[in-house]
Amino acid sequence: MLAAVGPRPVIPDFGTVSSCVRDNGLFCVDWFTANFSSVFGPALAQHVRLTVIAVGVGFLIAFPLALFAHFRRALVKPLGGLTSFLYTIPPMALFTLLVPVFGLSVLTAEIALVSYTLMVLFKSSLTGLGEVPEEVRRAGEGMGLTRREILWRIELPLALPAVIGGLRVATVTTISVVEVAAFIIDQGLGSPIIQGLQSPFNTQFIGAGLLAVALALAADGLIVLVGRLLTPWARTRRTV
Image 1: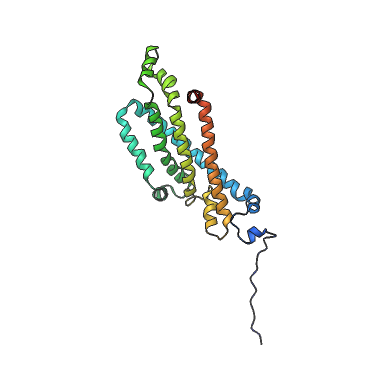
Image 2: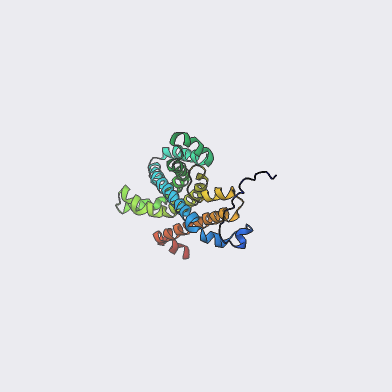
């Protein structure tokens, strides 16, 4: 007499797949394009949003601090030391320290992300302001400009290339750190990367990684373009 046999496992039917997907090729373009709107598109939009918020808030904090330190030189070392200290903390360590206070939330991620932008934005802005030639300031005084007018009409325009350079570095750095933030929030391109690494399928994490690289290159190029539009005199000077 045969023993009773339990129900056989049901193998899900995923439909027709390409040979690349079936054989787990290095990168399956058909699977990537078919799942872009459901997997990669939302993650990319989240990545952009987290980066823009972090760099924007970081600039709103760092640039006024740089202006303040520019006029109060005694504050340069304390503020520079504080921003440098925050920058040296490893991302995972900072996330770990913030989670008990703010939980597994976007706020936790943004606090950490903003802290990594402060040093670059503060030092680039301060350097740009400090490199304005003294004779240019004196020329402005000779023209009867007030201290505020010298700042807005002479110092800030001349410091703009250095500020733009700081924004480039801060933006590209933030894009990379946002991937690490996926360990505490299920957002950004780090999320499909982590999920892909936990499975044997290559295309998911490779596709998300390529999108992160493309995003960094696109953001850097956009900032360079905006910088050239805002500083046409710098481009003219280089071509002379």
